[in-house]
Image (cartoon, rainbow, N blue to C red; front, side, top):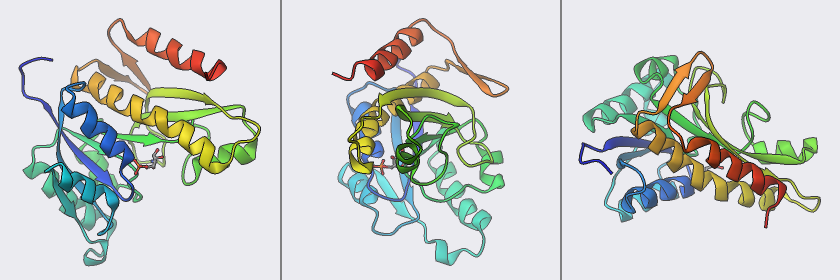
Length: 224
Ligand code: GRF
């Protein structure tokens, strides 16, 4: 880790917060050069807010009902992020679409984690979509956020097998394990300034990336 100022993260959440927990754990274990500066939720009783508070992190509920438009809501969120000097916004189970204004303000500085191998199965219930479609592998994707739904440039993906007796729950759980690994890794690549966006492609500078991909691909073939 460098002695430089750590990347300041703003994490947007709506629910359980297991990805938030993985990011906090990675930060506390100094596996990433980043600190969670603020957690913001559109759901008052989101478990993720409680979790953040337990770690002494500023955790704020922004009430959508007090805002007439999505942009107005986003402006309140952006004010909070700016006050905390957030460098990178991480969506972690945040159930609202960001307004074009938000995207413009933080373009290429917003990441999301999605529980499928994009561009397959964007939107809600990705694991169920994958199961119903009958794919033999699925996984998760960390991507930059653009104006579309789960359409932004892809940073990292992890692959898992879909087994014959899988349910929504078993497949989701298998994918989640990998979400918790690749989200902090993608944040670290960003913190190290190794990600370059060329049109739709995210190029990762440095030498250890191919092995990472090999590791995940191998696990897809041999899940033991
Ligand atoms: C995860 O499956 C993530 O991929 C999706 O929403 C879920 C959030 O889970 N975007 P958690 O709140 O991080 O546990």
